[in-house]
Image (cartoon, rainbow, N blue to C red):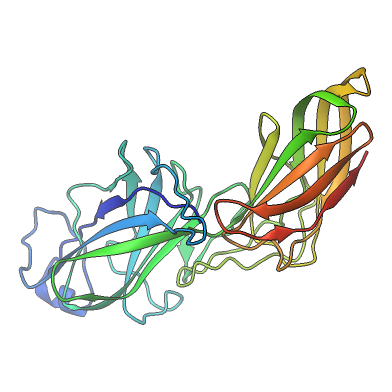
Length: 310
């Protein structure tokens, strides 16, 4: 799992009156009188670290949005609503920090609390909403992030450290020139990715893996000779069909458009959340052969060879 620069969040929801804050929490703006018996809660966070590689990444770019929820410890988000005033939306700045409207605060009485945060790792929440403890239906192509601070004791003004993890999977294919191939150029790559519509549980961050792929292909993002896409989790034993169009010199003959089709076989355990499955594919004049591959950056996983046909 990649690691990112520390970011900070200050969340504020001020109680309207004492009886309200004794029960849970109530939201109002900073012009209201602050109950001095309440405790301030702030937040900081990081990406989950890959302990094997100690890899790291740059901080969130400016404008990344995340949503934060608060509950009394042990409350089931599928049964109880989040504290009034939450979720609170935070947005990253140019330094990778997260900030919110400065007129909002989060004050709670001393106790033990559960905090959750979700993000699409983008400039918007990409339609993420929570209904009875689960998200609305999710889709491929979105880097869903999740974090929790369960069982947090708040006896003084407290900073809660949230560690975010990737909840979808990533497929990366790097194409190389095989025998008889020169001047390889990747025009496009598309895959029949995971069937969309799964939901994430707010309390665990889990997205139920799908049992089939979609009937419509989606384009992968192509960077020079590599293509990548983020997909929702997919159960073990389900292959992913794909198609690649290239331009190259094949056996000395210039070919403007050559299309190869094949399938990516399921790795052991399927395409699991938080894993980045990285394939290396050799392009020959008649086929594309996928060599043994491993995941990179997110978590190490080995993958079987793949052969595709024209």
